[in-house]
Image 1 (tube, rainbow, N blue to C red):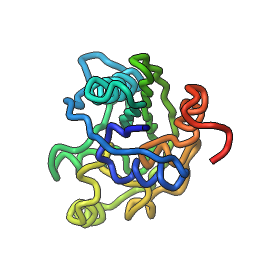
Image 2 (image 1 turned 180 degrees about the horizontal axis):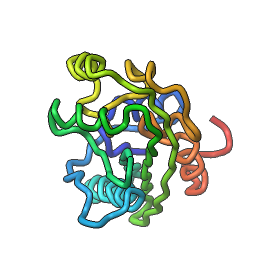
Image 3 (image 1 turned 180 degrees about the vertical axis):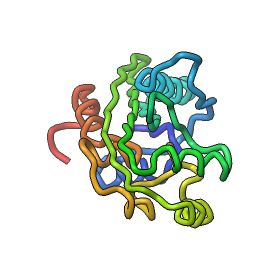
Image 4 (image 1 turned 90 degrees about the vertical axis):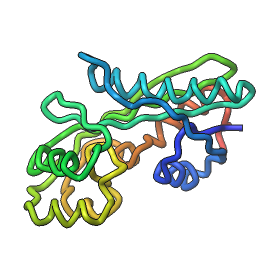
Length: 189
């Protein structure tokens, strides 16, 4: 059985939409970057830590862990700690291009493989009123970079380069390749 080590409803929806059967068992780990850690390394490390934490409890299952970060000017933006932090992140992203990186880790029989996907996202300028209204909607509070491309914030995203599902929170094509490579899923749905 494939176990998703995440409580994210977006990751669950992406897997369901791709026809991938799974169970959910969230991992509870600290999601802070280490001092001097690059964004890709951070996303991959956190995905690995999540997957391994759940795999220790479910050694006979296949475990999938993922972590998404947003990067602008070399700064890693995870989930905002509060409304003030969300506003700070949205101001940083407003009118600029940034990168979204999702690390993915698959644990099979105690062995793990890790990979990541990077997507460039362009965000239009957002007014202070729009930022305030968006934060009061509650949508940005549990999302890396304080926005969800699949929701209200879609109105400010005129362009992406790369995998859309990666920006939502799980690069489905990458996950599918990893599952096929590990022979967890065959060539047909």
